[in-house]
Length: 606
Image (cartoon, rainbow, N blue to C red):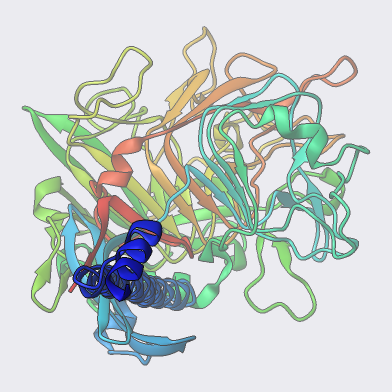
C-alpha cells in the first residue's frame, strides 16, 4: 500500500525519492554561479569606476601641472615686460630671472635666460616647470621682443610747453605698416587714435588703451562722435587692445640703450669724452647759444666698397622762429619745470674747421663690432656714436657722387643730440618692384637719437651776397672754417650760390628711433607762415622704408585743402621686414611685449 502511494505521488508531482537531491543541487549550483557572476560583474564595474576615477585624477593633475607651467611662463613674460632693458637685467642677474609660484593643487618654477642672437636680435629662453602630485609638465619657449612698424608714445604733436595737439590719420590714407600707440591715460578717456574720414589700415594696429571707458562705454573720438565699433571696418589687419607700451617714452630705458652703444662702439668711431673725440663747436657764427657741436657723415660707394666720410667738430647754426611764426619745431624738454616740450633750434647751416685732421674716410666695415654678453655674441655690424648732433648729407648732395647718400654695409648711428637728414638716404643692393630693399639685401641703416630725427629745410641756408633773403644764410666766410653745403644746389639760370633744395621725392631707408620727440620735417608752418622750401610746391613726397619709433608724432607736413595750400611732405611709410630678422646692428628693441619666436613654443610631459 505504501509503495503504491509513493508511486502515485511520484507520478502526480514528477519527483522520486531517488532524483530529488540532484535537482536540488543543480539549483544550488545555478545560484552560486549566478552569485559569482554578479560578484565578478560588480568587481569589474568597481574596477572600471576606479580606473575612470584614477584617470580623471591623473588628467586633472596633469592638466593642473600644465596650467601651472603656463602660469609660470606668463609670470616670466610679465616680469620681462617691466624691465628697462632685458640684457642688462640678465647681466645683473636681477631678481625675477628665476621665480616660483603656487596655484590650486600645484606649483611651478621658471627661469629666464639669453639663448642666442639671430643676427643682432637677442632671443630669450623661458623654461617653466609645472607640478601637481606626481606629474610634471614643462613649457619651453624662445621669445623675442615685439616690434611694430610704427610705434608712438602718443598720436599727438607738441604745440607749446604744455600743449599737444591730436594728429589724424586722414581720409584716403593707406597705412601699410603695423602701428602701435601707447595709452595716453587721458581724462576724459577718449580714443587715443585720431581718425578723420576713412583711412585704411592694412596691417595690425595695437593700442595700449582699453576699448572701453571705466564706465564700460565704447570710447569715442576727440573730433567726431564715432566709437571704436564704428571704425572696426577700417582695421583690415585687425586691432588689439590693452597691449604693453613701447618704452620709448621712458628716459631711463633710452639712456640705457645709448650707454650700451657708447660702451660697445670702437674707440675710433666713438665721438665722446670717453675717447676725447667729443665734437666741439668752434666757428663763431650766430649767437653763442645757437651754436651746436656736430659730426657730419657722408655715405657713398667707391669701387664696390661702402665708405663713410666723417667730419668732426662741425658747428651747426641753430635757428628758431619766433612764437608768432607758428612752425611746429618742438621736442621733449628734459628738465620739465612744469613744461613737457620746448621749441628747439632747427638746422640752418654749418661750418667745419679748416683742419684735415678732423676729416677721415673709412670703409664702413672698419666700424664693425659685435655685442658680447657672456658666452653669446651677435653678428658684427657698424656703429658710430656721437655725444652731440649728427648731420647726414654731403657736399653737392653726396660726397664723391653728386647724388644721394648710399649705405653699403650694416650701420647704426647713435646721437645724444639731434640727427639732421640733409639728403635722401638709400641702401645699396637689390630692391623689389615696389622699391623696398629685397629680402636678401644685406645692407641696412639705423638712426637712434636722444633728441629728434628731422629732415632739414635746405632753404634755411639760402644766401646770395648783396641780395639777402628771409633765411639766415651763411656769411661769405668765417675765419679758419669752411662752409659745408648739404642737399642739392639750385641749377636754374641765375640761381644764388647757396640756394639748395631736396629731391621732390625724398627717400629715407632706415630704422628710426627718436627718444626726444618725433620723426618729421623742420620748418613746417602751422597756419600763417610761408613755410619750408620744396622743389615742386606745394608738397613733395617723403618715403620711409624701414621702421619708426617715436615718443610722439612728429610733423611731416600739413595736408592741402580747398582753403590751404599745404606745406612740407606727404608721407609714404613702408615696413622693412628684414629688421625682424636682426639684420640691424645693436639692441634697438623697445617694446614692452615679448612674443614666441617662430616655432619657438614647446611643451612636454615628464
